[in-house]
Length: 223
Length: 189
Image 1 (tube, rainbow over the protein chains, first blue to last red):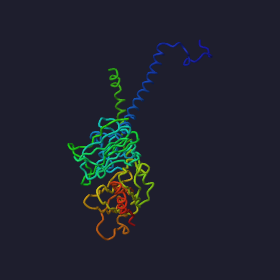
Image 2: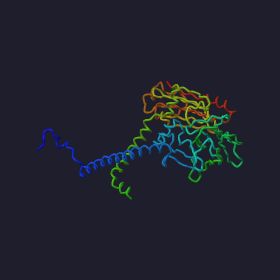
Image 3: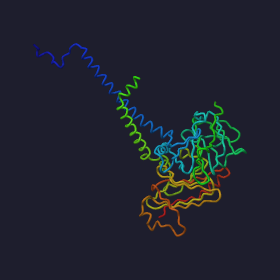
């Protein structure tokens, strides 16, 4: 006979049976399983969704960029009907680019071997002078800022470049003075080269598949 | 194999996560592209009067208004606002490398004219606001007699016009600075 002072059956503490332990274990496993599922769901949905959006608007994908060697051209940049990734990129960079319809704008953040351009290295940019009515090439740091230098030189254009007799040119991007077309980069960290090309009809000079000849970017030395 | 078996057992979870990820990707991308305001416009517009030309000093590391603005040109700006009246733009493009480009608030370059190497290009434009027939038909906005001036239908009433004058070396700086003085921008009221 149970006394009225004894604990009710539901609160009775008895020995831990193997059945109760198994039930408890299953419950813990279910909770852990739920946490893992939710984590996986969030990782795939949020991580995947946002990361792919960020990647497409930062590095570009096949539908909105064209790659020639180490040069990258955002094919819809600055246009009214630009793809959303290009629009996000422009907003993020805070720049006002020419429409890709009018000016072919190529950017390079790496040399031809795929290494990031850096102000501690000396690079040679060589190739034929662009067959265009106007072109210009400038060097910036990775945020698009000009790199202060004593020569006050930040780029070359169709009027200021000194080309060779065979119609090619060479620009040396280096900390220390070089003969010829020297582009000083005394500091700046990671670099970005921007080449803008306009053809004679006033539209972007976008070469056809078999005519793409852009300057090569080779590393000469590093400190 | 164990992992594959586990993933296979959770295919519904993975599929729904992929669908959710795709929706989030689209939402984030469209938000970023359409809702966010152009930082470039905000930066420049804050310093510019409306429907007036500002001849900016040469771009230097200390005076670089926007990222990736090349110092090989002199820049002149007009922040136009055609919401109440059309805006007239005139400029001379003496040669190669000169250009006049119009941008929307979102930084889209919807109009561009470049200088030619054979002769000077005279640019005269009337900027007409989008879908505002009343403003367009107003007698006060009727252009003066003379040859028809090309009208540019603006995608948005507000934006920025930029005249770029190339600096073809130090010797040409003064000349380029003088030639860009023909750039005009005014409300046609």
